[in-house]
Image 1 (cartoon, helix red, strand yellow):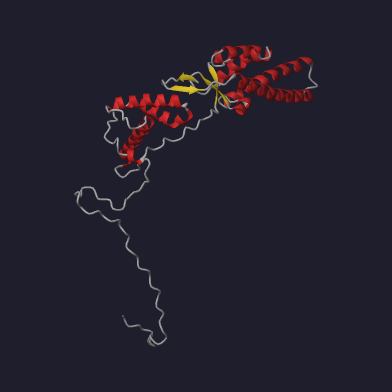
Image 2: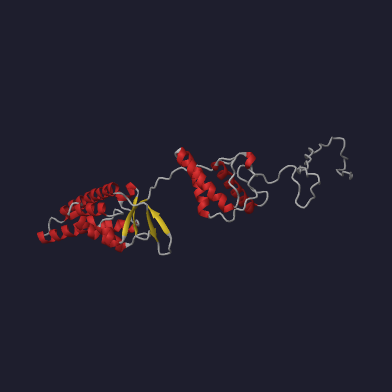
Length: 308
């Protein structure tokens, strides 16, 4: 992993492309350029057969400069560093600060690539890429660019398992304000990956993290709990506090089912001995009665109906 620092002092972690993937992408680009060059050359030979040899030589040189060199430069500029081969292998050319390349970067890379790739059959580019710590060829060095991987595999880390129910409120009185964020991150990463660690390494790491966490909270490390269970219980307590702070007293607590109104809850401000308020039941809505059909003898002959 290569750490780059942008102009805004933001550290970027980019994974430089390895030599095999870069070499394969260059071969794909050269194959596409060769096919395009042969097709354009055949069209020019068929349409310029009436010209003299000097004009045909000039057109041949211009075709060689435009198709195998100019077209890749234009493609990298318009696609922000993704040629045909790089698209197929998930690679991209970026600047040293992690930003997208511009025309001048693509021009320098393409111009030097003619010498180190085409004229030397890739020998100079291969040696420079193998010697460089980040796999850069001479064109990347002079242009200030870097080829990185876009398709980075993401490892599944899982979720932090909640502690046993009898430990849910045991650490409610701990002062967690002095625990640094770096320690919280280390504890969470350990809890999500402890199943992948060696048992001896996992036990030692849990003991060390539990000791650091107890030292920052000012509490004694419990002797009746394994260190991993202590870490999980304290992390659960922190998540519960953050949830209550974000959503209020009735907010979602990790490990509990969310509910807006709980049956039998006592309203805030009521004394301790006050009876619990039963859940509100919506009043029943009476169903509309069907309209009564008048009998033939109920309506007067005059057409006037007396008021009820």
